[in-house]
Image 1: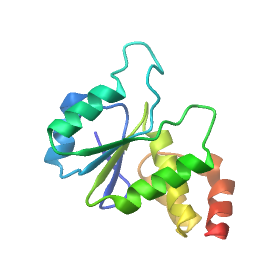
Image 2: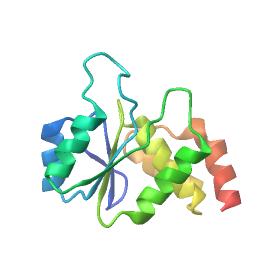
Image 3: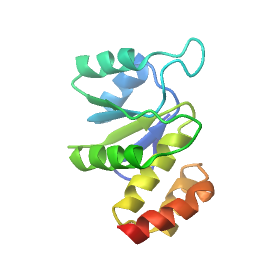
Length: 142
């Protein structure tokens, strides 16, 4: 259910309350929601996920990413959230793709190698090639 990018970073498609419990059982200490509320009918709200996480002692942050793309503030917010995390992190969106790509962008902005990030994403079943130029740019600016 959760796809491992690193020993401490996981991504997933949309989660519900049961997955929050599974995240706690897996040692997750922070859940990052990269999905905007009401993206599709019947979607569980971020507030419901946040409440379930809080009840289980898991930190929660929302960094919604629409299908229009990624912004510098989102990349910075993700990098800051990852830097502040005190244990394993789970990020989710509709399919996990935006979460994986935002993680890769945040890592590149901190100096990680784009080739490595692309390979990690691929190993987890995600294609980072559409953001490769951004990864290269962020790495160069780090």
